[in-house]
Length: 170
Image (cartoon, rainbow, N blue to C red):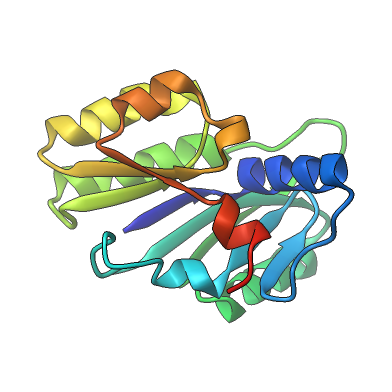
């Protein structure tokens, strides 16, 4: 299973694009500060086992139709289980990180997967990685090197750099 801290990934991706003076590649679906994904990541290579389900966690400002639109766009790029939360103006996003952690740990304790892919860069996820590993599952972290916590990189069983997938050609 893949668990994506999509809001964090989108913010980091947007920052890198701005620094480089670039725009998204044709194969990259992007909504600033909300989500970024490419279907190339749905099956990134032989080192990643078959993916059972992809969960994508993010927040969007607006009403229910705005939430539904982001969910629809995520499903279009291959995310089976989008978790899109409503973000209140000026309050920041709520529930994204804790929902990701809860889902990932519950699936681990229920033995729904042997390998979890965590798409995140924050050091805050280190206890989650260790708890999932304690349940017997392996954790592979995917992220952009520019935003990856060294402690999270160290805690993971393996790491995949997303830069070639998001900034390169498919």
